[in-house]
Structure formats: C-alpha cells, structure tokens
Image 1: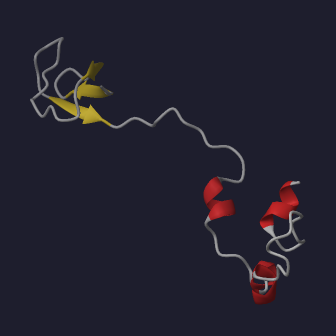
Image 2: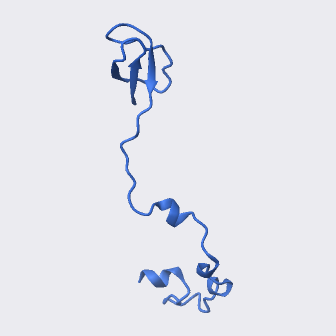
Length: 92
C-alpha cells in the first residue's frame, strides 16, 4: 500500500498516512481533527544519463537509417556463420 502526505487546512501540520489505492474515505488531522488536503510529493527516482527515450524512441536521421538492401542481404541462410549484415554478426 502506498504512503501519502497530507496537510491540515487548519493547523498546517503535515503527516504521512498509508492507505489503499481504492480507499476514498475522508482524512482528518490527527492533531486538531480538521480537514486535510493531500500533498503531491516527488518520487524518489532519478534518471541519469542520456535517457532511454532519447536513445530508443526518437526518430533516426536519414543518414543513420539502414539501407533497404542491407536488411535482407544474407545470401547463405543455412550457413552456420552469420553474414556481415545480420544482427547476430555483431554479438560474436
């Protein structure tokens, strides 16, 4: 169950409460019993580096696109050695 931060409207005290995602009941302040509002806090995850979205999902420039002939250029499909155009050739 996730933990949520709440702030009291009356006394401005901040507290954390663990509750189910489906629980929609009203929350009262444990200090004064006043109405509360849920606070949105940042998640403790930091992505460093260039980022997977920039490297995996962006459109490639036309100069980096593989040519149509290179995709299906294997002449010997039954050969045990991979041809230079196959993705398996780079993993050996």
